[in-house]
Image (cartoon, rainbow, N blue to C red; front, side, top):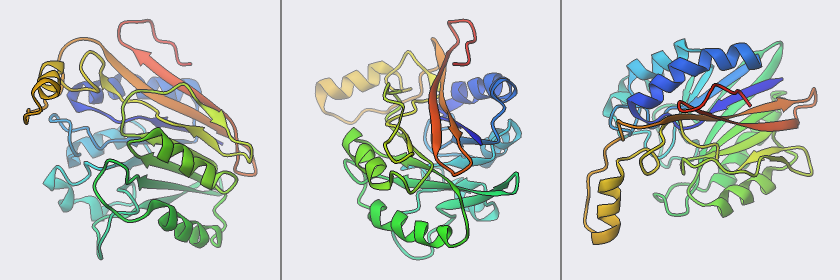
Length: 268
């Protein structure tokens, strides 16, 4: 079983990169499951629109995950409850939270769970992701779900690694999102769980994690509020990973994907 995961789509250029390369990646890699993080896919780089969600699905995604910007585009409240294929972090607090924190796909007679979690370090205070995922795993394991993938949307490498070690041997793979810079630590942990601290982003590479660098630098220099706008010029990238899982639901191999508009297409 192969799962293709594409990191945070940022702005219009991120959508353009997805449209340009996702069909080619699916043709070349032949994944059974494709997951795309779309929480930055609006032109403003915050939130997701119904139009972009449908576009991502039409390009070949099976599930779209979100993160801390899930609610930044208010339009999401009009459609998130109408689909099982768009999931927000499981541990958002409160009762009757719109949407869902996971989905279960049926692939080649196997059940595949896609879970979205959010970390708490340097992010808004939300429910404990460790206890939330424990409760969910107990539920879905009783439903004979063999393959379990988690998009862990978190700020710090320590929280991401801690979660991976906590879940090692209980899930197929866990991959980090949110910090937008792909890390070089793709690995299979000792009990069979695939892990990558940060998958990276899909969008403008010449800004600061997708934003125009002048405004970001201004904030660092002055510590005054500064409006962040998506970088519209320069080189664009697509970041992702391919996870190859065995018949028992554990990871055999996890490979990074990094495609640049400035270089010839090279899948891995």
